[in-house]
Figure 1 (tube, rainbow, N blue to C red):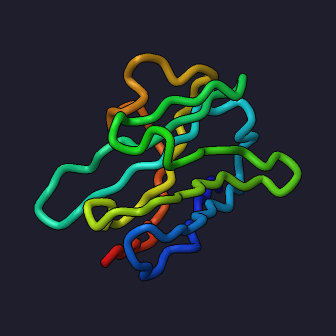
Figure 2 (cartoon, rainbow, N blue to C red):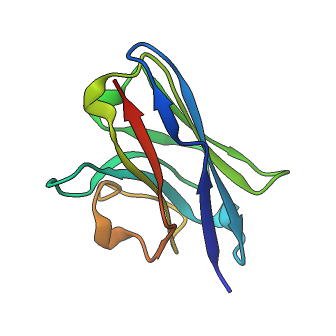
Length: 125
């Protein structure tokens, strides 16, 4: 049974930092493309970052230089370190897994991923 469980969300002031975690179970996630998405009220779910089995990372332009996606293979955890947070980063953040080794140029599309977590809320004021 594949399960992704996010944690680490919360409320923070602009300029602050948060670290999101995604506990992965039921898959050998080192062989998966893993991603973080976010969805603000009234908006489409947006790809934020991805990391493939080789550790190659990709980011949406709006978070480059501020967010870092990483895998902790010992803990089977995917993380998203977020710094210099802005009010426009406010959203529900989701962890996702794609049953493929490489994320490809479609890393930012929802349909690339077949497993999703329930989300964790991030609010920046």
